[in-house]
Length: 183
View (cartoon, rainbow, N blue to C red):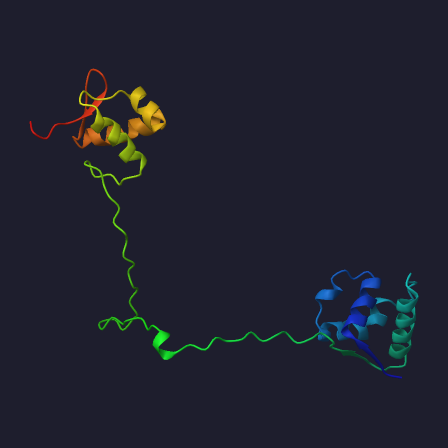
């Protein structure tokens, strides 16, 4: 008496026996487990499902008779992905460095963003602080810069401190201003 079980039937049997990860087993693992079922369960286990109970009894009888159980893999094969055909003109080959023989990385050209009169990129927090200082001839206090830029005092002090050390800003009675380069 030889019993053949589909992979799905074997998985359902082991799930009924309490093996929750049975659905992750491949057909070979499942066949090994089924053929070692007498070692796992020396006594007959009572299952709630009558079909599973009948299948378990049939499997045990076959194994006691010294015969093996065959698992038929009924899982459908995975679909093959289609490969897009590419023309030879669409293929780009990286240029090789003649000295090292290795492919060179192509450098991306960066878009140059504008900079303000002091050299900070437009649209940055630094450029906003510089704009406030450039717009007032007598200089601006930290509070005025905070109102206009809505930045923290720490951020503004940090920026101003860097440019004071570089000699671009100077401290005045009312706040800070940009040093005149005409002096």
